[in-house]
Length: 338
Ligand code: TYM
Image 1 (tube, protein in one colour):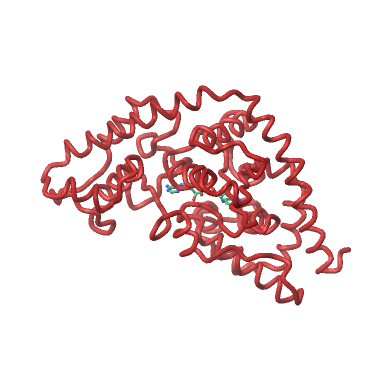
Image 2: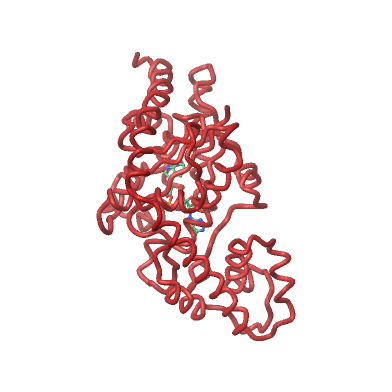
C-alpha cells in the first residue's frame, strides 16, 4: 500500500495558504484514497520550535488537527494522526541522515536562506537542519506522495536525493524516494506547485509569520475582516483581469483563490471576468467567496471537540512508533549501528 503523508507547523494561527496548499489537498486525497492507501497526517512539532510559538503549542496542535477534520479528513484505520516528537525515531533518523546530507545541500535551501536571513551567525542550527528532519519524517514511512505547497518542493527534492544516496551507499533499497515534484503536483490535481501570494506584496508567498495582518487571511479571521483584507489587496493599474502571474500577480492570486474556493478551473474563472476593466466587482466577488468559506469552515471547526483529536493522537502515535521503529532499525543496520 502506498503512503500519502503531510504535516503543517503550528507556530500560531494558520493561513488560507496553508489550507489551500496542504490541509485541503490532504483531506481531499484522504477522502479519495483512504481505502487503498495509508494516510499520515502528522504535526511537525520539532520543526515548529525552530521559531517563536504564538500561544500554547499543545493548543495550536489540537487546532491544526481540527482543521483537517473540518476540511473533510475521514476517520479511518488507514489514517494515522500523530505528533512528530512523540515518535523518537524521527530525531534518531535525522542524525543518521545528517551524515548523508552535505552542508552545501542544506545551505542551498531557499527556506534556510530566508529564515536565517542569509545564513546569519545567530540563526539557530535547527533552521539549517530543518530539511533533514523533514526527510526523516517522509522516509520513515516510505511516503510516495507528500502534498505540500510549492515552497516545500525543494525539500522534497532533497529528500529524494538523500534516499537515493543512502540506498546507493547501503547497496540496497532501504528508503523509498518520494515521487518527483511534477508527479506530486499531478497527484494533487495541479499542473504545478501551488503558491498563494501575500495580499499586500504578491511577489511573496502568503506567510503565517508575516508581521502585516493585512497580507494574509487567517483561518480564524472574522469573515468581515477577511473580506476587508481582500478588498484592500494590492493589484495593478492595467485595467484587465487576466491570469498572468508575471505582469499581474495580485489579480492572478485573487483568481487563484477564487478558482480553488469555488472548485472551478482557473480558465473558467478567468473567462467569467475577462473584459472587466475595473476591479471593484471582481474583488467584491472574491471577498464574498472568502468570507462565505470562512463562515462555513469555522462552523465545522467549532463542531469538533478536543477529545476526537486526542483519541486519534493516542491511537496514531502507537502505530506510528511501530512503523517508524522498523524503518529506523533498517537504517541503523545499514550504517553498522546495529
Ligand atoms: P509550513 O508549516 O511552513 O507550511 C505548511 C504547509 O502549507 C503550505 N503553504 C502554502 N501553500 C501554498 N501557498 C502558500 N502561501 C503557503 N504557505 C504555506 C506549505 O507548502 C506546507 O505544505 N516543512 C513543512 C512542514 C513539514 C512537512 C514534513 C511537510 C515538516 N515535515 C514532512 C510534509 C512532509 C513546512 O514548513 O510547512
